[in-house]
Image 1: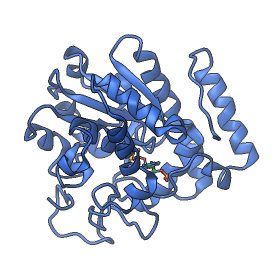
Image 2: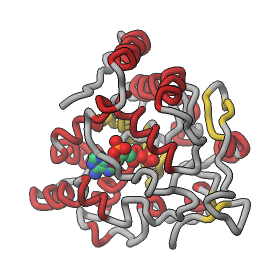
Image 3: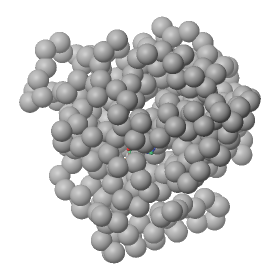
Image 4: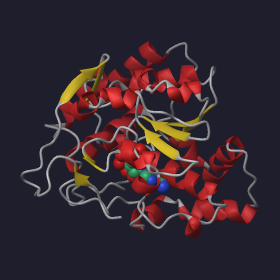
Length: 304
Ligand code: PPS
């Protein structure tokens, strides 16, 4: 299977491809095609052995997807299906391209691994009813904002950003696709007390990938030998995933993602935000963190 086709048109070019607009879904800012398909998304029927990987965009989703897929295949990347990661683990709320995420999942045998960026209150209820396991990956807000800004530039499934300053203003106000980062990371943090959710930090994965992969394996009830663990660490290193066409998103057609504007696998570091934020912008984000995450026990590292 190659890249996706737009669901509504057959012939497209970079110039004619229409980026989505933003709308509100139950008070959360979303791309318009999610609102248009909301009823079928909400009615999604999860199965008890579905595993959900949830993130705010740009938190390290693809990294966790690749780790989990390899873990589920006995630690051998060669045993995973030789198709891009976005087909192996469908994106639940993908509606702009055909097949949609819902169609891909319908056709997929169990056990399924599913990717979503939905905030906790918008997750289809069947996931809770079926008591599905969930892995949530969170990344500090500053690096997330920078990564998301560059992703908006190259990914035509998102509105085109004007400037970094405007984008950050919208990010801080939660007026971007998938809503407020602050509400997202906190909502899923609070939910982990009531449900089998493994909460993982991108910064911890950078600091000690072996330790975090081991945590994921334990959560999934899998035992790992030292050599398999090392193999997974090597295979999922940023440099290796960046050059792997099955993980670097170059299999998407150029009308969907233009890697000449900014590569999907861009920097893969903690602290790149310092190249973008002014001191005032950094303090502003810190203050909102204090206000909105204060008292939750949830804290982020912005340098390693
Ligand atoms: S998406 O589109 O929301 O699913 O994107 P997501 O995969 O969550 O995030 C992309 C960012 O994660 C970085 N990345 C990695 N970092 C470290 N190690 C590995 N293996 C890795 N794989 C992906 C990717 O480079 C994006 O971050 P930035 O800061 O833009 O480089």
